[in-house]
Amino acid sequence: MSSLSYYGKLSFLTIDKINREILLLKKRGQLEQLPLKLKEIREIEPIHDLISFDYKLAYASFPKLLPFGIQVYNAILYAFYMFSSYVVELTDSDRLSPILEEKEDHNWIIASANQIQFVAMYLEEKLLYLENYVRKKQFKNFDNFNRITNDKEVIEICKELKELHSILRDHISASPEQKKEKRTNERLQDFIQNHPTKFDKVLQKVNES
Image (cartoon, rainbow, N blue to C red):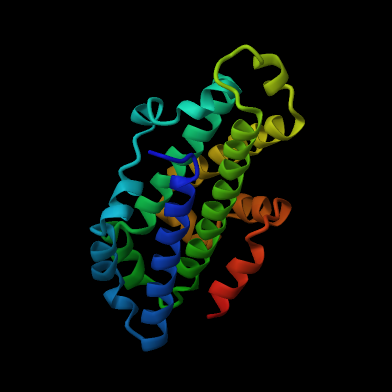
């Protein structure tokens, strides 16, 4: 893994692909084909890498995160672990099939895709910040540990990632009935509204296309 932002970019491309397929099938009135289409998407190699994300293996794959200390390290890895679980859930045709058969209104699927598309871009932005921070400061060890972990932006990123991890964890653990009743994850929607990123205009263009 050559870059911290690899999973961020991969996440965006994955969700963009899923979102476009959902919208295309809806436009054609063929949403019943979504489970089959999702099976195809899951087999695309980069996407398979994302949904197979193993945070334990990632400990050895993100050496540039070490200067930030174990708390930031864990916050980022667990956020990605939960995010990959969220993508797995959205592309799990076995779980989606009975829900698709029960409901005629499938807007909640598109809403979910839109939400995790935001999360993908949010994660990419934060990883790029941390990656550039390390490169700029040229940290190679723990000599400046206190100064790094006292950086206000790094501390804020850590707090936000922990919050995101909690939100995704609670959503994934909810029952299908709870998810259908809520239609979209309210806590995640609040997070999106309260954490604008430089990618917001990109997301708007993608959703309008």
